[in-house]
Image (tube, rainbow over all chains, first blue to last red; front, side):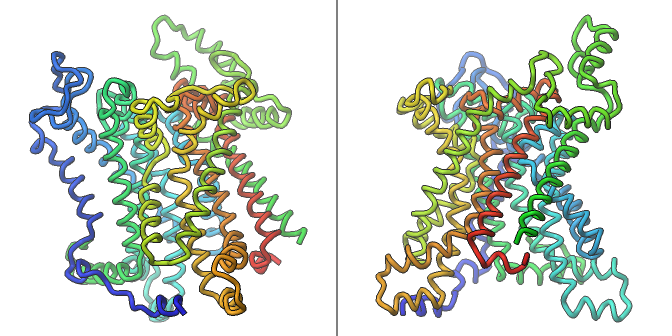
Length: 299
Length: 318
């Protein structure tokens, strides 16, 4: 039967993977990050440099994406804006990673009542649609760059906690963990030096998904005026400004939209790839090596 | 059997209460009332005015008492009044809920209408070229935040092609044709991200079903490929996918907040954004609780329905 033949075909890793070249999504993501971080080297015009004589200029050799309503270079604003978007994203993902891991590992390790309470807490926070919870937090804590990062980070924490809990439960059920306990190793030590490197790939994959959510949350909030506040610029702010001039210059709103889409797409693909068993094994080996030799973890 | 239903309903009620407390506590976590935040920076505001507004909004009372007033008000059908305009929150929500519900229902329905045929086409030949294309398109779709999809759609269909309206909402009863024309773009914006979620899940369930013995038996007894797929595999694959409907309802309710703003609908999303701007907690807390309640109720309905229809889910609960 046809199905049987398909099922029997061995999965062959593509040549690119066997040669150790990172996937296209990761390379593209790296390119976006490098372009934004090194914005001053890429574009000569500053993001706030106005030129009232050339509003809505078409794309030229001097302004690759044209200019906005007061003649600011759009490419420059796109890259400098990306810096803020990525900064909020990185900060919130790091926060969610740390808080979520502690939360999830504690729930898994304690079990019983503590687990119940910690995980029902996550359920409650996740029962409110994320963007609405974000609106509530912004109304309560204001819309500064710092509060935006903290709010986004806290919103992403419950999903990290869930992931950390489920993989920790799997790991602590394995023989090496019971053996460690039997040999008298401290739980904290066992969790941090043995379990953590093993669950790291799953946590990193969740972090990539969170990063995509963070980009979307920042863009959503800034788009409605409750996120990054002009004159500071982020992709969400650019969307909002471009949205106001859709009929004058559609490409104004289109370029931040494309950046958001590409970043989210690449993050999703990277997360997918990291959560595949093959990649997890490789990442686990790398993490082990790093833990032993004190070398940096290769991602 | 009754025990499971009661237990499931009780969990939802506890969840609702906890959600209402969470919203309430977060909104009052920082010292300083919304009144000072709103008026504090404007010129010519005296302490007396602040005190009067604080008192009229009931913000000078202890937190627990404020919370109980809010909840008992909800149970009596009285949501209080806006801190600043004095309009009753109930009628504000009543005016805004129509567009949101309509958009959510159309968005979810559209997602299912797109996802089911695509999943069937995809599962027919797993690993085939059509499967590859559908998987790639759905990955791209999942990367679209609904409001970004909305902006792109406005650019393509309103700004460039002049086919569909970019802004506005007309109630269905006033003008059905105009209403549906207004709904097309926002509903597609939501479905772009929501449909792939259903699609992926249903596709994987279908592939599993098609790989199992009962479909092989059906094929062996001479049922045509289409019949095996639609009569034998699809019902078994569709039931677990019901839970995805609950999930995309949450996604759509959340996504519609910003989509409404982008398309100029005066729905619950627009109302919540505006009240977050004004720090009008009286409106914001009720709107957010209402939308969360809708989400929790849909999840409950989906759970009970799949429990009723699918014996496989009953094992654990007894």
